[in-house]
Length: 262
Image (tube, rainbow, N blue to C red; front, side):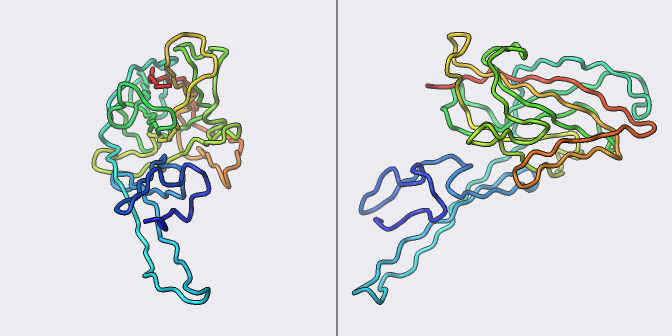
């Protein structure tokens, strides 16, 4: 057990928390220590590879049997619950797509039931979606996403999560964008966006409560020409020029509060 380790882990948090003659215990976030992930049929799977170091005998041979182990865990992303939400700028006409003039509603939700109080560093899974609409010609785009210690999206204290739809370069723990795949419960993946944020606190919050609100500027675009990409973890500015019959509808969606434990 003294030789079991995570070969892809470079951080001290990837080192075992406990060792004994019978067991070794690791404790780290899903986004660290070389963990990989895959989303399929509404289920996200994480896995990490472990092995035991082989110690040479008399400097030239090994007598230890090679040990390799893949540890995995799975979560159903479709089991989500609605948090308190606030939608602004939601009423817009879209005559080229909707049969009738109406309201386009968006919301922000958090995967599964978030615990009453979330530990700092724990992953928070966020979904932004367009409600009660199944037009596959529409695309939901995330622009800037940020967090504030109050429900005021213009609070002077803010922390950028996404900038122009891509992870902010100002955070050592980047926001992770997840691919959205179709499933029985999700037939229009273009109307949903998923990302993961590690829970954090503000250094000097404007209130005494340990809470964080999330906000996103979004755009609802009609295909074609709705492009958004991030490559090599570098931000690419998006340039969308509306084509004939196409309209881009800006809006803001907020979610929270999420409570954290110091």
